[in-house]
Image (cartoon, rainbow, N blue to C red):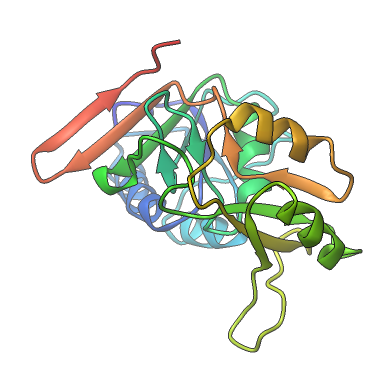
Length: 217
């Protein structure tokens, strides 16, 4: 818990890795090891877990400058660029990360990859209007794309009420910056899961222990 001190304002990411961190943070607050921590959750699920652990919550409207955001990632390349969002909260995760002085990512070694998109799809958050048309446009970028659906074959909805798409790139994402530019210029695509040049530190855990990676940039 060395990244969080008493009096810290933090962004809390979403996903299975973060659930362990949130429980540890709650335990430290209850024991008095940490005090006066305020957290901004990135999803309703994170908010519920944090509340159950006794972590005081706030919003970016009340705390627009966070000391740190802590989150997981679905894939991390050698430059510490990330794919995030398979926990279905990518838009809120990116907003929170942008309001933090630093972004620390916690992963296990299976999330490391030489090229982004080689092991996991890239998630996107879309407005529901003309979502199928967006899939056709996305396929023109050289990927296989589909709407992310639930067990009833209905489109999954984010906490913001939007759709999610997943895009698979057969050879990975060779030029993440170029792809990000295409996606950011497309009306109706609200956000993509490429988190480029954002992580200040990646903490990697495996059977040999824990190591920390910093960007070379």
